Image 1 (cartoon, helix red, strand yellow):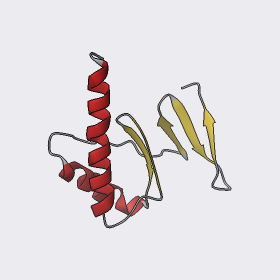
Image 2 (cartoon, rainbow, N blue to C red):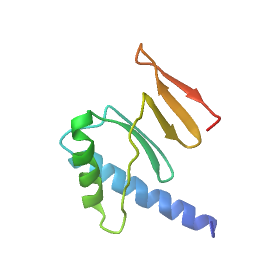
Image 3 (cartoon, helix red, strand yellow):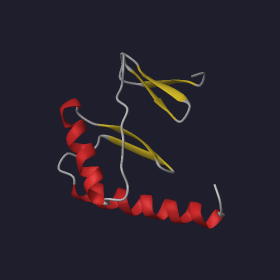
Image 4 (cartoon, rainbow, N blue to C red):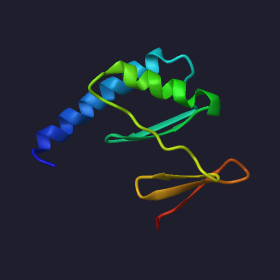
Amino acid sequence: MGSPVLVMVANLIMEDVEERSLATVEVKPMFWKRYVDDTCTALPVDKVQEFLDHLNSIQPSIRFTMEVESNGSFPFLDVLLQCDSDCSISTTTSL
């Protein structure tokens, strides 16, 4: 990944983009967790595209993409997150 300084710079930039986007978005995510440049976010289904467009408007040189939940599960950082019937989250590490 190059110099260890680059990792710190990337993290600072992502933190800035994160703070600006979350401070100015109309519908706040119910859940937002970030690891380096990957985020796991919970939003109402009808607000997902609007939120993605907002994120991509904050810093033109950074483009966010998304994966949406399918059949109640969602891959994140080599872990499969599964939404259970009681709204809890269980995980499976074998993707």
